[in-house]
Amino acid sequence: MVRYLCINNFSFNKISTMKHVQIKHMLQHLLIVASLSAIISCGGSTSTNGTSDTSSSTSMDTSVTSAATVTHAEAIISGTKADTTVDGKASFDADNGKVKLVLELTIPKMGNKTVAVHIHEHPDCGDNGNASHGHWNPTHAQHGKWGSGSFHLGDIGNVKLDAQGKGTLEMSTDLWTLGSDTTSSVLNRAIIVHSGTDDYKSQPSGNAGSRIGCGIIKQ
Ligand SMILES: [Cu+2]
Image (tube, rainbow, N blue to C red):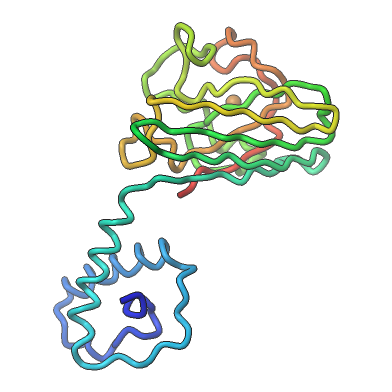
């Protein structure tokens, strides 16, 4: 079944006999599936025969449907500035109506300091992280401390770093999802690490300093 998803096994001769609408539809599926399963091995398979086009459509639809339930996403966080090394990873796992975040950071230059981490709205780390724009705030709330009073859904909070600049944070919430609901899904947003501490009060972003780390949350 997997082999039919591979572009190099697809019978393009058949495409010429199909209606344009069908071709467009199949190519859309093919693009989606190819991006979701780019790692799936395409090697070593055999050539297709005349009946494979029908089965390929079926298996593509099945794959796209099953891929719609996302249970894991992650962001690899790296530095936005040449003079500050930032390494980190944010893992998001959905289970039982909740999403659990495990965040690990290493910022050697920031040993024994505390840095603010937020989810920002757009999946773009360009312009030193500024292209991610403001905090992800689908409820149009005031910025604050997670879990108390008013806060953005992106208000993860502060992470204390040890002498080596390592820090971790774990949290679990039913306010986040991994899916297509843009009012709750953390997918396709940016994790931003700031150079300073979030005061949990200043609007709109806690006076947390410049953006030194960034990663895009992807499934
Ligand atoms: Cu921020």
